[in-house]
Image (cartoon, rainbow, N blue to C red):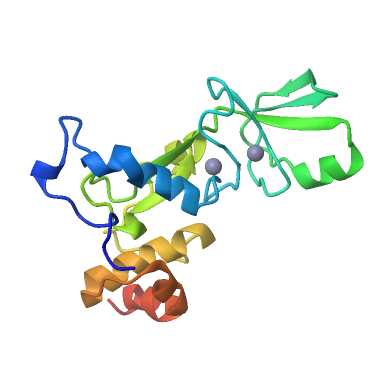
Length: 191
Ligand SMILES: [Zn+2]
Ligand SMILES: [Zn+2]
């Protein structure tokens, strides 16, 4: 699957908000669906329209994020943990406390343009991220900046797709990119 809706859009294909028309119609929904409605960085699950205004949404055992969560016992909120610094081992809690549910605050699933360009809708530029991860990486992650250290696990396919395009001029699919991950990440070290 090359191109399709995941491509760069011309100015006349975009609305006044700077986004391609296809962004609102399909792209942002497709990116969330391809990520199985989870933040690709912290794993928090979120389905648009299913969590009221989005302030609280339930965690599951694939979550690996910090606090700012509340505990519910038999559906009734019993405590709020306000800090964002500690990790919550949701799987362990669910194992030991079957009556407990954990909900995270403000982790609505958004779609972030990693290079900041709304018209660049190549797959490697679009990451489904919850609001907190979106804020955490904004300004920190820059595709075009040379990065001599190891990339975070979640970020590798995206930056490798970018390197294939930037260094080799190759427009690879996600599967092709993952198949050549080490080779593509080495391009940066060689540069
Ligand atoms: Zn997240
Ligand atoms: Zn969570």
